[in-house]
Amino acid sequence: MMIAMQYSFTLPADYDMGIIERRIAENGHLLDGFPGLIFKTYLYARRDDTATGSAENLYAPFYLWQDAESMHRFLLSAGFQGVAKAFGWPQVRVYPVLSARISEDVTGVVFARREMTDIPPYSDLTPLSSGEASNGALIDVTAWDTTNWKKIRFTAGKNVQTGTGQHYRIGHISLPGGTAAG
Image (cartoon, rainbow, N blue to C red; front, side, top):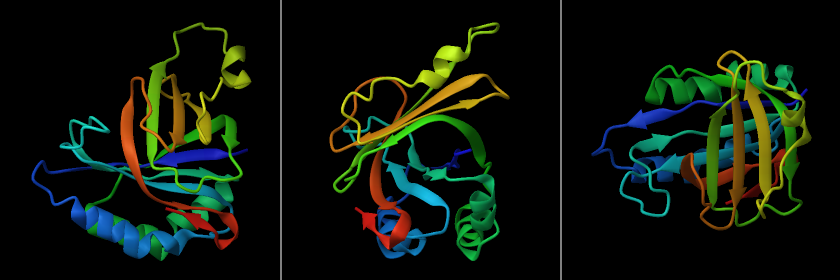
C-alpha cells in the first residue's frame, strides 16, 4: 500500500527563505533514487510570494512511498535526523493513499497545492477511492486521514494552481532511479 507523508515547519515572518532555497539546492539530490521513494517534493512557501498566497513562511516536503518499510528506512536515516536537528522535531503526518497519478515527465514542475477537506460522519466512503479528474496536474495524489476524517488531495504542475488549500513552490523533486527534477 502506498503511503503519503508530510511534515511542515512554520518559520518566523522575518526568516530569510533564501536559506531554505539554498538548502534544497545543495541537499535535494541526496534523496534521488532512495529505495522505495516514488517521489519527494521539496515544498516551500514565502509569505510575501503572491503566486502562492501563503500567510506564512513554510518548509513542508511531501513524500509518496511504495510501502511502510521504505518510509521507516528514511525516518531512521541520517537525512531525517539532519532535518530534525536543523528545524526541530516535526509531527510527521502519514496517510494511506487512495489514488496516485504521476506523469512520465515531471520535469519543470514548479507549483503544488495540498487541499484537506472534511469527510462528513457516516459518509459513503466508496467514491473516495475512485479518484478525481487531475485538471492537467502532472502529479495527483488522493489520500485520507482516518484519525481526523480528512481527504488530502496533493497536486503539482508547471503553473500556479487555483483553488483552496495551501499553495507551494517546488524547489526539487527526488525520483526513483536517481533521476530528479527541479
